[in-house]
Image 1 (cartoon, rainbow, N blue to C red):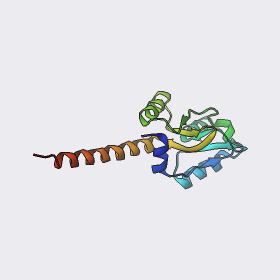
Image 2: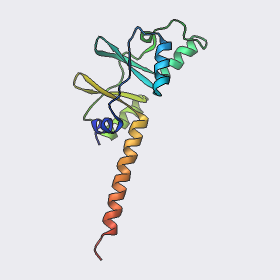
Image 3: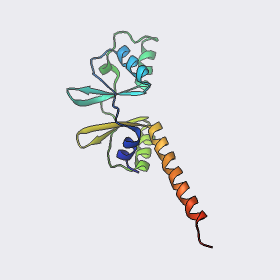
Image 4: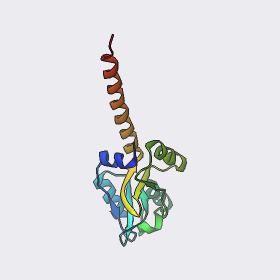
Length: 144
């Protein structure tokens, strides 16, 4: 299974924020959309990623308050990215080795989506379920 196939299963929703947005606005967007990351876009290009990990660091540094911090102050400026044709096993390996839970998927210079560890786990589970049903059908109809 390829990353573009997982994106097709997941859907095409892409949540973004600008680098100059207040962190409180980013938190509100993440809560309202029940998501754990935002792609930081600047003039039509991906400038970074903001995840709950960076928000927790900002809260810890601010003594529990976000204050006047902006997204650009805490975002990951060069996030780990993968291509649209990456195999799911390679994607899982990248996510585990880099310890990231959210990975932007690029098709050339175009951002086509973001995959979370949850998206990957769900896609693998669905693929395994399909293969399991196919094998059971094959065994059930085996000529005697």
